Length: 121
Image 1 (cartoon, rainbow, N blue to C red):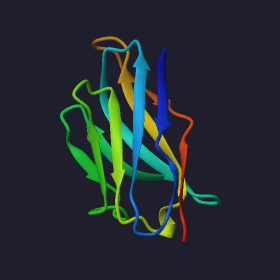
Image 2 (image 1 turned 90 degrees about the horizontal axis):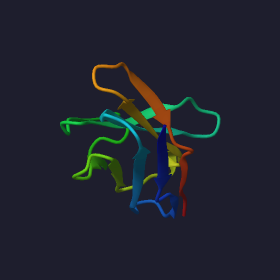
Image 3 (image 1 turned 180 degrees about the horizontal axis):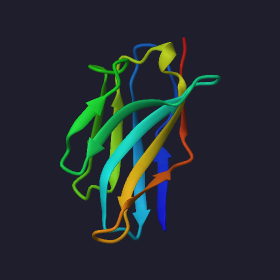
């Protein structure tokens, strides 16, 4: 089983910064990709950023130039550095992990519970 736990959310004023973490534990062969999504109240879930196991990154248009996704040396923890935060960044941020449990087997998706980010004056 794979466990995904996000942390680092909170309240910040506009223009401020937060750093989210996504820690992955359990038994798996590898993690081909880690995605960060966000979901604001009443809105659809939005893909914020992606990082692959080879550290290729992609970002949603609304966060380009402000957010940076990374993975630690083990590859099992992802970080989302969020700078120049705006009120419209307010949402629950969720980590989605693409995991391969066994070599040569299809991947599976695992989700964390999410962490709330609130940006307001």
